[in-house]
Amino acid sequence: MPRTATPRHYLMVRPTFFDVEYSINPWMNPKKPTDTDLAIAQWEWLRDLYLELGHRVEQLEPRPGLLDMVFAANGATVLNGQAFVARFRHPQRQPEAGAYLDWFREHGYRDVRQSRWVNEGEGDYLVAGGRILAGTGFRTDSRAHGEAAEFFGVPVTGLTLVDPHYYHLDTALCVLDADTVMYYPRAFSPDSRRLLEELYPDAIRAGDLDAAVFGLNAVSDGRHVVLPQAATGLIAQVRERGFEPIGADMSELLKAGGSVKCCTLELRT
Ligand code: ARG
Image (cartoon, rainbow, N blue to C red; front, side, top):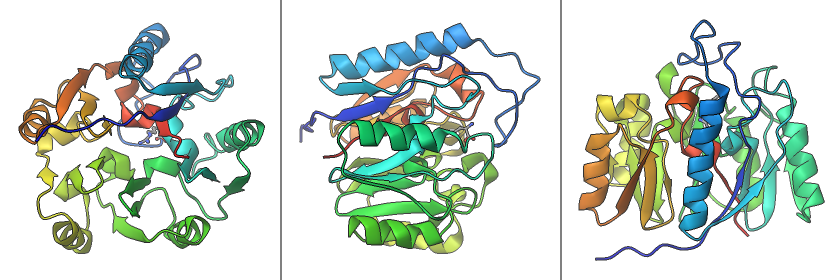
């Protein structure tokens, strides 16, 4: 059965000030050199790909000193034109929230709210059909799950992450379409694994190697699935299910613990 793409609207932040100078996840090693120009080139490739696929890409101006700002997925969760803005766990990223609040207000979003509890946007909230899957364990406070359910009026299903390498839900699970997901079972607590098995008996399950190259940090438009090119097992599995995988080289951004999905915030109207 051929899959159908639907045009998407994304918000992205150019990695102009990208660097790794602190460590807030196990992938970040400040001693390892980074190449900002290469990060920019990889990011521009991704932005151009989205445009070629017929999607709309909006850009939020990066701010100096905010090294992780390229990871736009963390700025908010946007559904039905409502923006639920992040409250970051770590002080290094906290000032990013203000940039998102300003951006949504300036762009005519009427229902803009910053969450009361720690919440890292689409890093931990993934819209899946009529529900939101929400991660907790490392970043987003589970109390922010209830807040999101109330704000959006949509059921929120909480999932607990247990491996610090997969600290955001979008590093361990990807929504391919309303009822298809792929995920890395080992990243989840036993209860959450059981829940995922119940909800998605036909899910694609990622192996250790694909998970470790951030293969689950992917973006799907219903047909094209953009994911790290090193995730060769997942690329094959996604193709078998009738999707069209597109491999991306995001090696430079991986040094900060991010890849394709982390750079992409979906704006749903
Ligand atoms: N260095 C960033 C952090 O640890 C990476 C964020 C990745 N973003 C994501 N959506 N998983 O916060």
